[in-house]
Length: 490
Image (cartoon, rainbow, N blue to C red; front, top):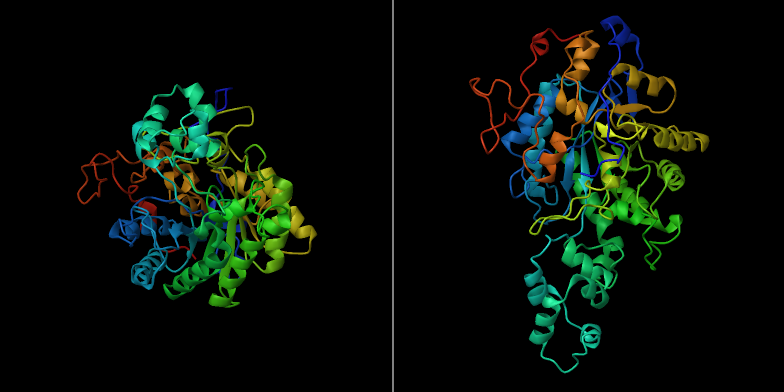
C-alpha cells in the first residue's frame, strides 16, 4: 500500500474510558431511528469482507460464526459485507443475485439476532462491479489478447504483414516504443490488467447498465427483506459501478454522465426501484464517497450536493467513506489483479499508522461534517454515519455532540475487538483491545485471504475447538470475552 512520504509514526489514543453510568448518559449509547429501524445505540459496524463465503457465494458456517462473534459485542448495527447482486462468479464473496441464496442469508440473520439477544440490527450491503482481469504475461497479451488494428499496422509500417508477424513485432518492442504504438487503454491492459469502465458505452452491456441495474438492485433488496435483514445499504462507494456513475470522471453522453445532475440520475433511479420493491417501511440507505481523492475526481462539494439529493429522494441514512479507486492503484504483479486500495486514494480509505502530519485518525470527519451540514441546511434530518480511524469513546462522543455525525462507524477497531461496544458500555473500556492501524487485515483482504487481526489471530491456537484458517496458522475468530457471560445489562 502507498504511504505518505512524511513517514510519521502515529499511535492510537483512545483517551479516557467512561464509567457504566457515564456511558448510559452518552449520546453514543442513546437510541436512534434509522428509517423504519430503531437502533439501541449509535454504534455501527461498517461492511468488511472477511472472505468466508463459499466459492459459489453461499453463506458458510464460517460466515455465521464471524457475524455471531461481532453480534456478541452488541453494536447498534452491523452491515454485512459487500454482497454481489449479479450471477457473476466472484470467489468467496457473498452473493444475493438469485433466490437460492435466501436460505443461507436467513440463517445468518437468525444467528445475529440470537447472539445479540435481539439488540443488534442487521443490514446488508448490495454491490455491483464490472469486469477486471489479472495483469497478463506480456507474451500472452501480445499473442492472444490484443486486438490488432490498422493503427498498429500503420505505426509499425506493417500494413501487409500477417497478423502473427505484427504480434511478434509488438512483443519485441522496447517499452518506450510501445507507448507510441499502443493507446492508453491497451497500455493499461498490459501493465495493470484489463478493466471495464461505466464509460465504455461501445460495449452493449455497459451501455445498458441504466436499464439493467435498477431491477438487479431491487430484486436483491427484496431477497434481503425475505431473508430477514432489517435494511439494505446500497454500495455507491469506492471503485465499483455505482460510484463510477457518481464520479467526476464519468463523461457518458447518454444523460447519465457529465454534469452532476446526470451523474446522480442512475443512483436515484436504483434507489427508487429498490424502494418500490421493499416498501416505505423498510430501511434503505447508501454508502458513498465524501471525496474520491484522485486527480479530476469528485470533491466534497459534489458529495454534499449528492447527499442532499439522496436525502430528498428519501434515503434513510448516508454512510460516508473516501477514496479507494482504481485510477491510482499500484501496479499488480503479473498474474494478480489491480486492487483499488494500494494508491494514495486507497490510503485515504484505510489510512495506517505510518502517515503524514494529519495522522490516520478521523481523516473523513470534516468532509463528512460538511455533507451533513448541507443535508441539514436543505431541511433534511437523514442520519449520517461517519467512520475512519475512530477507536475511542471520547472521539466518538465528540463527533455526535459537535453535530458532525449521527452514528459512528468502527470498522478496523471492531475487527480488533468486536466486544468494544459492550466493554465500553459496561464501564470496562480499559479491557478494550485497541487497533494499532497497521493494516495487517487489509493486506489479507488484498490477497482474498481469510481476514483476521494480528492482535488476536495467534492467541491460544492450541485451545480445544479453535477454528483455524486454511493454512492452519491463524485462528478465525477472536477469543471469547468473559464479560459476555455476564447477565444481560438492562
